[in-house]
Image (cartoon, rainbow, N blue to C red):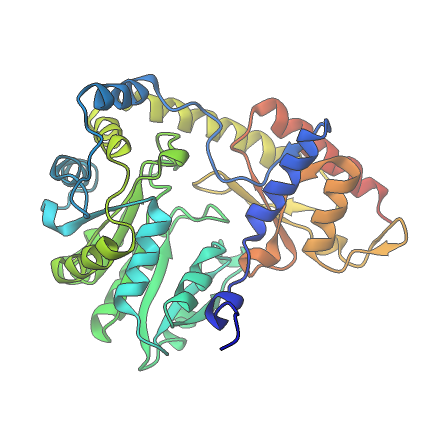
Length: 399
């Protein structure tokens, strides 16, 4: 037999966001002054009380295996968080703790998809959704949306994609990559559709706390017991508590499916890091002022960047309602020239911008959104403003 890697792995597309971020870090290491709008992680340090909790876990000797689904204490803390913040009742047996929210999503698709099952994915979408669906043998079915609907697909567009093979829909609110927040009416339409057909809802709420302009987060699982019983609510501590490297995510969902996922995870990875689990428990139970302060700073950066981007001729953006991303419209620049090269795509724009002005953005093609680039404002205000200034300088060079 030939010594080859599997077709399944060969067909996995690499993450463009990580590629751009890696290239920017290489340039920084070489001494270049790079502004990196690519990475999706808060630039704030993990709050001290959470780091202290990790030290406490070490002192307590919490360095052993935990149950594959997570410690009972952390799962109970997650239940209390969901009760307090989201007015929903779960028991710890309805919770699975994983190695980050991405791992939770991967396990969901492994648990519910058989070959040929379809998953509806509104676009622009996070780069990993379609790949994780494919890795589980499923078929991603994209539902396009654009700026005219705030990057949220219309009810008609959603309903038209439902078939007898539809197994789930992914809802991301607030959204990566576009910062959109779904309204109660939009969520209710999806909930009614899911219950009537039926299919699962995978609700990615990792950016729940990062929401602006006085809005309040609403989970689709809050809209009634029927839809709650069909919803996998995915969250974690990475974004809200600046704990990306700690790798703790979780999913709350129907008991039968959660048990199946825990069995799968027990064979794939076993438990998430025991020390990080303890720290995550303390994060959820502790003083939340660190989250409030971080959100206020993100909102300040968002406002400044949106204003400056919209002052650049040929590019524009809408004001995102949540997360820490801006989708910058570059459609008017496509077809222009730089140094003898024609800008034919968002990838061309991103590559030339990085080479000429040392500014890293993620091309929209990574998110099924050609004609756009994603900028993260999870960097300092000074870097935000300097980066946008350089973008303006680059645009001025185009002919």
